[in-house]
Amino acid sequence: MPIHTIDHRPWLRSLVWLVLTLSCYPGFAGVAHAAESVTIPGYLPEIGKIATYRIEKTTETDMSFWSDKPEADSMVMRGDFRQQTAVVSRSDKSMRVQWALSPVLPPAAQSTADTYAMNPQYANSLAAYGVQLLELETDLTGYPTALVGADQIVAHMESLIAAPGPGGATVPADSVASQMVQAVKDNPLRVVEALIPEINVLCLAQASEEATSEVGSTWSVKDETAVGEGIVPMTSIWTFESTDAARQTATFSVRQSFDSAAMQAAMKTTIDKGLAAFGDRAKQLTSEQMARARGAQKSRNLTLIVSLQDGSTVEALDSLTVETGGIKFTNVTHIWRDDQLPVLPKPPAWNAKSVSAQSVSPLAQTTTLPSDLEKLSSEPGAKSTAPDEQQNAAEAIGSGQSGTDSSSPAAIAPLSLEVLNAQSVLDPLNAQPAVNVVLTSTSAKAFGDFTRAAIGKQTQVLIGGKVVLEPVVREPILGGTLTISGLDTEQAKAIERQLLAPGATITVRLAP
Image (cartoon, rainbow, N blue to C red; front, side, top):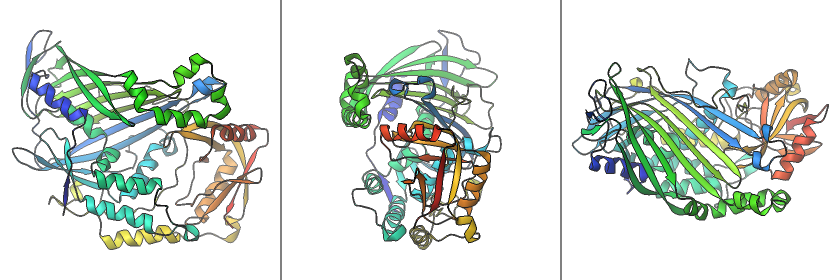
């Protein structure tokens, strides 16, 4: 199976090697105090041993700058995952690593499934790439250097694009989907960045060989990273915080800052598009407000806990904040190996009252791989799914086939649904205005029955007799929520006002 190797040297990888060169890395010496020298072993995972990681993630979108009611214009999306990895081989220069990926909520997840909007989104990503298993070539820190089987992933994505959609519609050559395929062709490691972004955090704290430093020591590393349409200088300040003799771990922190002027230049096109989307509202800004809207800020704080037995990262907390175009995004990820009790806090917005419960229409699943590494062959390069199975799945998507029988015609009749609440938000998937709609309990049940009967069919959502959305139903939507996207800011606000009126309803029906 082909292996695609890319000259891929983002700031994370170079940062690790610079730190090693400077010999400033935390270590093991029981309970360590400031100015005490400590040595940590190089990363040496046991071949074939499965490590399971829990991952809690939140994305908070704050649009209060643009809102007349700031307290209501923040939305939080969250996800809870359980992923597995194992090193299947190792040489003196590299490793072969497998990751088994799953969108399924862990058994210990709190609250109802519909409050974890990231999980069904992740399921769609896995379906789009046609994988549940990724096999990688990595350096000795675990950082990916090549993706095994990239050609198969590209072929799967192209088969989905080539399959005709409802009514025989085809995907334009300049579509987002086509651009995604080209991006993967240019750099197959984009798949890793999309499906396992946490790997960069984990390998950041893992060294290829042991090193010695002092508890309390601080050092800085200057580097640069690609952002938007440019390269942005960045500074990382590392601090060796402490060791824990009982847990046999070492903790260090990283604070990263990014050059503001370079950020603003790199994000100019994105900022201009965002301001244009706000139309007349942007024209009403004062000069001071416009300066803020055209600014761009980025910062990142990490806490990393490393095992003093094998040099692996056993827990990490990663907080990234970006403010641009007057909108503030905060992404927080908490990762821990499940054989260790977590000691770092959950993401601050984990239990926020504004956690999104939006429904996500799933793509058809096109892989037959098990999700546990125990069930996978240990032979490197195992195929993720047969090409015939991928083509059959693509044809099913295009023709609207489904393995679920439809209910009676009455169940697919047009429905008028009562609205309990509506809120204009920024869609975290594309940073564009959208409206989250929550139905009453009675209408939520009726909507669930409707979507169950309409699986594989194109539907329409109407407000005031006007079609605002035409989704293809992929599975029952039982949470009583839906998101209306593809709007500009004025349209989103108008729909919100309309649906917040007493007795407001929306209509759903099969497309004519």
